[in-house]
Length: 405
Ligand SMILES: Cc1ncc(COP(=O)(O)O)c(C=O)c1O
Image (cartoon, rainbow, N blue to C red; front, side):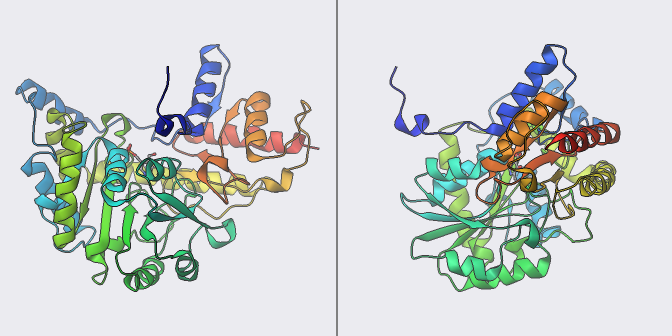
C-alpha cells in the first residue's frame, strides 16, 4: 500500500515509544518505574465526573455546536478575562477542541502558508514540529540551555526573525524543561513581537496552574500592544487531572480572535465536529467549582518538585535548573557521554543513557533528542507520581550513574 508522503514523513513520538516499552516490560512482570508519561497520577475530581454522569442521565447525547455550547464558552471567556487578563475575549472567540493538542493542530493549519516560518524555542514539546510541518510550515529553532533556565532571550528572538516569520510558539511553564518565564521576561519578548508586523504568538498555557517556583503565571496575550496577535491555548488535561477526557480550547482577542475562531470552527466542522456533548457541563464545573482540587494537586507537585530537584542535584554530573512549573525536570546528563555502563553499553547520547537506564535499572525516562536542539544532552524525568516512587527512581538513577565508568 502506498501511504502519502505527508504521513510517511511523520516521526512517531519517542515519549510514547518509551512508555510503550516500559508498559511491555511491566506486562511481563518486570518491575519498571516509569517517569516517562506527561500526566498527573491523580484521579479526576469527583464533582467533575458527577457533572458528566448527570449530563448523560439527562440525555445530553446529541450533536452540539462545533466550538462547544454557548454556556461553556462563556465560562471559558470569563476565565480568560479574569485570570489571564486577555482583553476583548467573548464566548464567540473561544473554540473548544479535543485536547490542547487538537487546538494547536488547528491553529497551525489555520495560520500557516507553505514555507511560513514558526519560531520555536527548544527544547520543546514533541508535537509542535510535526504539527507545524503538517501545516506546511518550517520550524526555526531557537536553542536554549540549562544555564538560561531554558528560556529564549529577546535578542535570540530578534536574531531568528526573517521576512518569512509567521508565528512564535511560547510554552510557559514548559514541557519538557519544567521552567517558566517571569512576567517581565514575557513583556520583553512582547516588545520584540510588537516590532514585527504580522507575527502571531501561539501561547501554550497547558501547565498554567502547576506553578511552584514563586514566579506568577503570565499570559503574553494580556500585553495590549500585541493582544490582537496572540492565540492562547489551554485545556483541562493537566490542571484537573483530565488527560483522558480530551478537552482543550483556544482564543484570540478582538477582531483577530473572531476571524481565527471562525476559521477554526470551519476546520473543526470537517474533522471532529465538537468534543462529546455530555462533557461540556463538566468543563463548567471544573472551571468554576474546583479551585480547591487544583490547589491540592499543585501543592503535591510543588512538594515532588522539591524532592526531585534535591535528589537529582546530588547525582554527580547531572545539571539542571530548579523546576518552577509543570511536572518535569530536564537534567543535562552529557557529562557521562563516552562512559560505559555496567552491561557494557557505550553511552554516546541521551537515547543510549535512557535505554541503558531502562535495561539495567528498570527506570523509564524520555531521552531529550525528540525535544529538539538543546535536548540531545538531556533526559526528561516526570514527577507526576508518588513521593516514594520518585525517591526509589532517583536512587536507581543515582546507582546507574555510579555504575558508569
Ligand atoms: C506543552 C503541551 N502542550 C499541549 C499538550 C496537549 O495536551 P492535551 O491535548 O492533553 O490537552 C501537552 C500534553 O502533553 C503539552 O505537554
